[in-house]
Amino acid sequence: MNIDTNMSTIITASALDGNGALYSRAKERAITRGAYTSRAPLLLRRLRLLLAPAKLRLLLGFCVFCVVVFVTSRLRYLMGWIPHDPSSVSSSSRGGYTVLINTWKRNSLLKQAVAHYASCSGTDAIHVVWSENDPPSDSLKIFLKKMVLSYSQTIHKPNFKFDINEEDNLNNRFKPIKDLSTDAIFSVDDDVIVPCSTLDFAFTVWQSAPFTMVGFVPRMHWLDKERNGLAYYKYGGWWSVWWMGTYSMVLSKAAFFHRKYLDFYTYEMSPTIHDYVTSERNCEDIAMSLLIANSTGAPPIWVKGKIYETGSTGISSMKGHSNRRNKCLNDFISLYGKMPLVSTNVKAVDARQEWFW
Image (cartoon, rainbow, N blue to C red; front, side, top):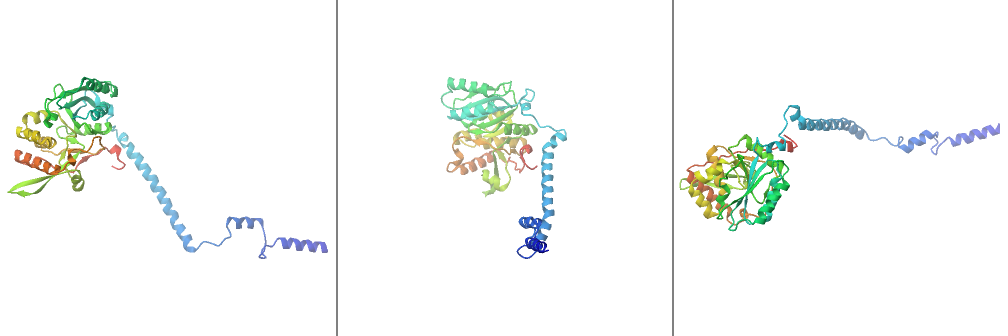
């Protein structure tokens, strides 16, 4: 009897914890996990209840966004529209384009430009406008021809030729070219590189409006004031375009136009403008923009795309450049007797390269 009583006392003592409460292993594990810690404040519990649906909505919204991005990226195929494959612009039936490179005493940049444009599938021919006193060396000719053959990715290798001029004159870049097999001319400076995919997209834009000018470097004009009863216009650079959201020119340093404008520039444009460009050594690009606008009565088309300038800072950074461009613009307009330029705020964008339409 005493033994049973003692055992009962031992069991009872071991079953009680330090606070006198009944002890169990389950309770000990629960305490370890925090199940018996103090409850969270009421406000915190309500906040969790409110956030749970918000998290669910956020997750569902993200899933919907992913589906929309996927569907829009495939929509052109679902609707039966497949964009031009880059190889399609180089087929003989489409003609491709002739790259017209203007260069002057920068052979290293010329080599880089020729190699790059030879690699573009739409390039049918490459012509280099050479206006230096000495003709290109035989070694340079051979080197560039070999470069064209090695860098071209198409079965039809681009034709390559130097268009040699006897005098240094900016009008040379717009002389007519014999035996062209394309209507499209891509005029470019030797220090400007346009990625092939961007160039081919611009070519498809030009095909939709082949008699306007399609390019990558927009500029603008605006009426400043009247002087002696005559309108006076100002020439605006890139920052003016960015600020105003409008443009009326694209520069020929990187632009497509129809080959007929080479004839128009040389044979039909006022000789006074030729003489002006020769004496000023500037503004041939403004002259071409005015010529095409006067012919079409329509604005040019700016193609949004990344281009790379590999040369040093050009004449646009020289002191007095803006004043000279203003003077060119107004002198040319006075010869036309009107303002041919048409302003626009439209730009062509390759939607396949954009996140949002």
